[in-house]
Amino acid sequence: MRAPQTRARYGLGVRVLVALIAVLAVTAAVYAGVRDHDFIIVDDQAYMIMNPVVQAGLTIDGVRWALTSFDAYNWHPLTWISLMADVSLVGPDPGPQHLMGVGYHLLATILLFLALRRLTGREWESLLVAALFALHPSHVESVAWVSERKDVLSACFWFLAMWAYAGYAERPGIGRYLLVALAVAAGLMAKPMVVTLPFVFLLLDVWPLRRSSWTDVRRLAWLGLEKIPLLALAAGASILTVLAQQPGIENTAEELVWGARLGNALVAYASYLRLTVWPDALAAFYPHPGWVPLWQALLAGVLLGAISAIALLQRERRPYLLVGWLWFVGTLVPVIGVIQVGDQGMADRYMYIPQIGLFLMLAWGLAEVARGNVTRRAAVAATSIAVALAFAATTRAQVAH
Image (cartoon, rainbow, N blue to C red; front, side, top):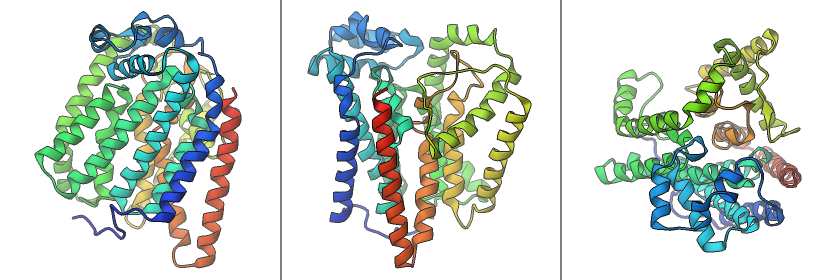
């Protein structure tokens, strides 16, 4: 049921390649200051400073420990192993460790571009999504904080899985499916937030892969069954995560009732939307407010409902709107606070993957505006560059914090 792609999938145009290199260069320059940063007392003690296993570098005993450890309230062995490997490669000092995080972020940007390009056949739209992902200031926490290696590392496997899934959709086969499953498993071993990736695959089946339509329930059900092995991997990772985070979940459960959690979740969704469009007053910690005012929860609910309704009404004519919106809403579910761990009401690092859904909506929406008119195309290109550069300037300032 796939529609033919409108552009070559493997050959990369010179202009697009130059633009991608420019995005990577600007991103590297924006984050260059992290080489002079120290570790952060929050979590970096557990992940690096006072962790003798990681400080010893990559060893067989260290790998065994990583595979069985629930340290830092998580089961993410590949994150531990990557930190050990970095110590062996560049040493334990903070500057090189921060630069390795930037390197993973650059790699994730490349993989995101390649995955979207293979999925959609569209180069410039894919590049805009990758550029916004690379330069948005809300991602500074994920990139410039050693303890958040799990974000950038899991994103690399997430995008690699998307790229592999595009290949499987082109020519389904057990070998290609196993490649997808391997990338998903690796992502889950880097950060459990990857549990939502099978859900994203089902969205991609509708658009851009067009393996089904929104209304073909039987076909969607079959495609859902196709994801059962991936869902089994996600379920296993979820069980391990709950076991690792049980102390934090129990402590929070005593303090926050369901009404407070649901109210904060609605407001958090709206706040993430606002910070995507206007990323001001970013913070390392947003304390949970407890009970939010009823009017705030209702207003946030109306906003989310209105966007959902618009995306739903446009699902046939502009399927990218509903796919992008459900990507944003769905991938935030594990960290939106319904199951609360810790004292934060929201966090910048939680936007690292979910924001891509909003960027998809924006990039393909702008492409539709620009289509068929040279003047509009030039205006959209200029606006896109201006927004990316504004984000770059804001990100550079945020890095300093």
